[in-house]
Image 1 (cartoon, rainbow, N blue to C red):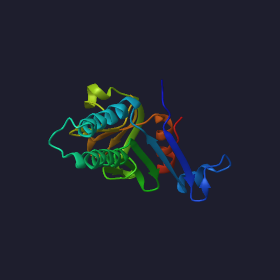
Image 2: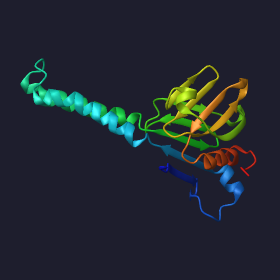
Image 3: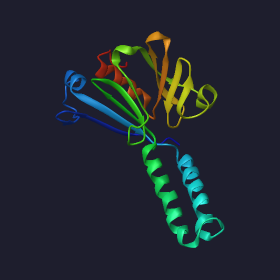
Image 4: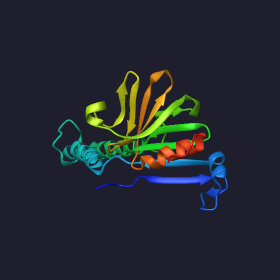
Length: 188
């Protein structure tokens, strides 16, 4: 089963419309794609938070005073919610400045690639576990990946022979937007 990413396209004049000319879209637009973590990863995350909080609330942890059990458990859950909000999936933004990526809604961990750094790009199917050891911000040396789930990506060949994989549920659309907004030929 495939889950769709949240995709948002717009120009300075509002959302993209079918009558926008290609040139208008190229110079006056941005594309934002949000790919959430898989549901099983969110279930594991919240399960761990509940397993850490429950013993405190139930009184199994005798190191926590009775009157502090609820505040300590709530602090753990609120901190977990805040952290989940910060690292919630992968956000990719393509605009006239280049490609920006960050985890979650708040760009704490981020990366920016200017269009002039891109030598080539292609849509690829890859093996996240074998090639990068999983999902997230991964990689070593000249080969890096920013992914949230799945096995599809846009692979950018950057200057200095570096490679960057950007995970996407709709990699053909992401590649086309990078080419269109970045001034390269549209994807065939």
